[in-house]
Image: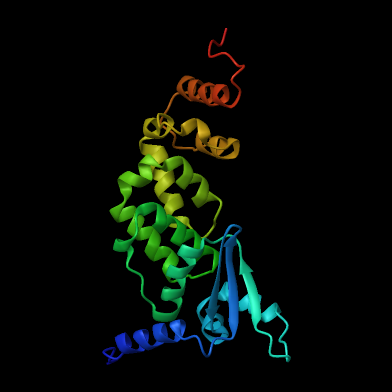
Length: 219
């Protein structure tokens, strides 16, 4: 039988390594100007914890002049990456400390970094604990989930909601902000419980919002 009582101390020691300014061998530039932050880290840990970072590091030429390896992650916010580093090093992540929009950012970052253990955990947390928020922000969640193949649990959540409660989706205040691609995907669902007339009315509503010169009078 495995004895895991020593794991908390191991986790704490690894977090101390993250904060150590003496032995790091890589710098990571995270974010886009003017919101950029440089993080110090250790290649061996990044290599074994993130398949995405492992791939980047494997294509980086090793320098023998003492210059540190430097990589860029422009698609992740610095504050989000700080959370990711604590997970990568110490396996720690307290979702109670973050609001739902931040959890979404963490999920997207986890997906980009290929943190396969974390991705389903975050999706389950959102679906179980933040259902109302997901429904209220359906349009952005729908687009995000279907742009990313690793977010299958959120995709299934969205599909089920569309099938069972389409009126909730089409009556959302931000419905008209949804992309054309996402709209087409929505109305093509096989189990959509709406008449063709209702669907056409919502499509017309969306079209008018995209072009203010159009009239809401179909005649």
